[in-house]
Length: 111
Image 1 (cartoon, helix red, strand yellow):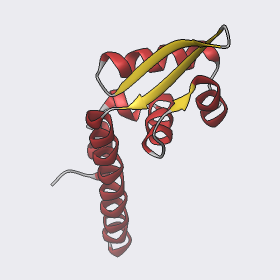
Image 2: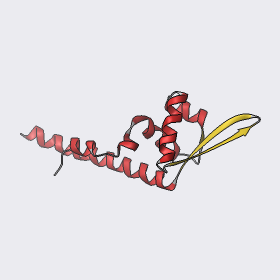
Image 3: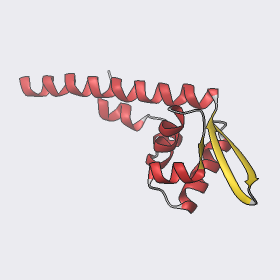
Image 4: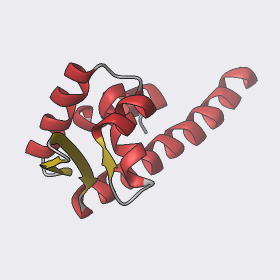
């Protein structure tokens, strides 16, 4: 049986990276979000948000739509079905690791 620490090391690093985890979590709670709203929610810089969205799009976890609205560029992100399933699995795994860590801690205090 692996320890919670070993389980943490085996998490999907694409999703577990803090910026991408924040983006996917935010997008999983809405139909879509514009770039400005995501930047405010996540606290990421424009450049970092753009880079992370590109990585998530390349992995098929989000769709990016770019258009002009009132002659201004507008970027919207939407989580894909694959992305939604991935973020749900990730949070379930984190919750499981937390429960295992709590039980593991109980075993340590008995020694």
